[in-house]
Length: 180
Ligand SMILES: [Fe+2]
Image 1 (cartoon, helix red, strand yellow):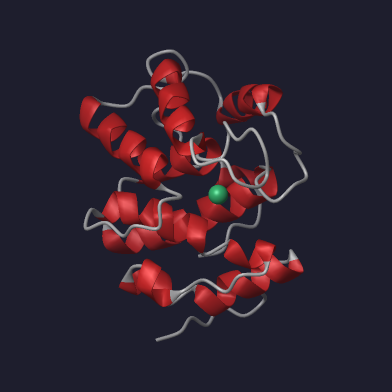
Image 2: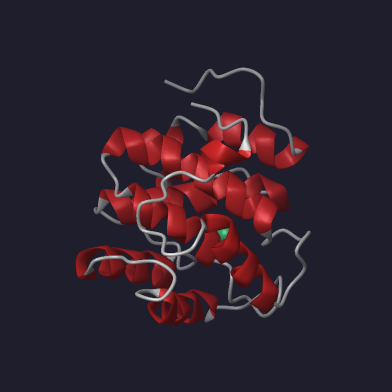
């Protein structure tokens, strides 16, 4: 599955109380680091793509994965070392829930765990949380790092070469083959 237009990128939409593009606009208005930098919206879009593809295979909660993509780096204060940015993102997500989107308690619990832990280098047994982390780690090629299989799920490992090429070139690879 490759997303080729904005409508596909805007799925899933069930949880939103405003349009996803308005939510994204609001997140970007408060975003403190470069919108064209390595933690900006082009990274979020690739994270979303990887998360939707992997999440659909492993039975992850795609609403949670979708929100993770747009929120996980939204509270960064710099592009380098910012170990608290995941904790701030989780706090921000709690402020937005019931106002701009509506996640159930169990979904919020998964989202906050995924946000809080996403840069700690852990792996998780929960498929939704690990899908979020897979999706973020698969885009490490943008900072010159090839994603390491030991930090990815079995499904995520299949996408290393595809994701790396996308991160490095900035273009969706035309081939769809994945590692077996
Ligand atoms: Fe990220």
